[in-house]
Length: 316
Image (cartoon, rainbow, N blue to C red; front, side, top):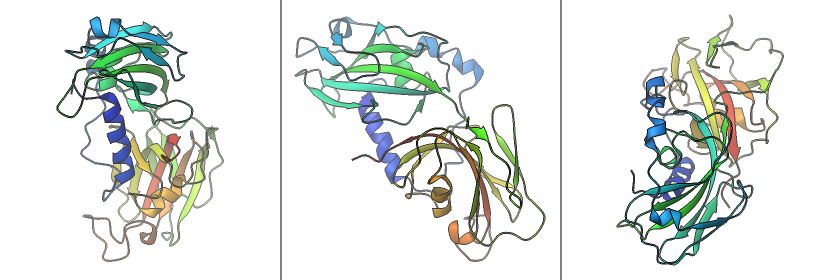
């Protein structure tokens, strides 16, 4: 973990989003969000500064693509992180969703390898923890902090140098303005942390796809092909039971129109970031018609409450 490139991890994460495919929208076996006790370890997770990172000169504003100047080849024997500029506000905690941006450079030649997370190439937020590369770079830093990180060479490639900006902490639930409920749709109640619970109405199950906006966010409109990060809560109308949800674990990233059932993509398409929607998926918009069963949800009518946390345009 401590010798893997953050840029490589980011590319892998984006590839996983593009190729995501599972029988339900998220992995029900995903590990839960780190507990409060784990948050105490985040401050200790930051790796030490070193000669390699301290030799790098950085030019540019926080949140904007910047340059790294150093004498190449730069000898990097271990993972290092040096704080270039400290942010302000409350320190991040383990499990927080954070936005970040980075520029990567070859430690051998000094040439720029890639940049991502800036206005022209936004990244989805990621959870920070003591085990994550971001946690190892920043520890419990404050938003607005910039570090220079250096990774030693591996069997996969030469050493690399990064300028990494910890931009902000983002909400883990929809923050939009509450909307009037729609008659005939299931009703939703929210816990203090935003986790929803669903009450199904009396009467026959719908036979066509339906959705309603419960909270209206003021962010970008979600388009087909976008990468999105959501929280979701799924209930079977047939049994009344919760069959899957992201709450209690990590928010779920996916590409609209790929790797999830059609109705799940339709639920977020045309909605704005910060919104919460409820969608009713008949079998034709979910896992198909057939004999009703619990194993693969075939034949079942599903209800999803989806909080749209972030979106990024499809990679060009």
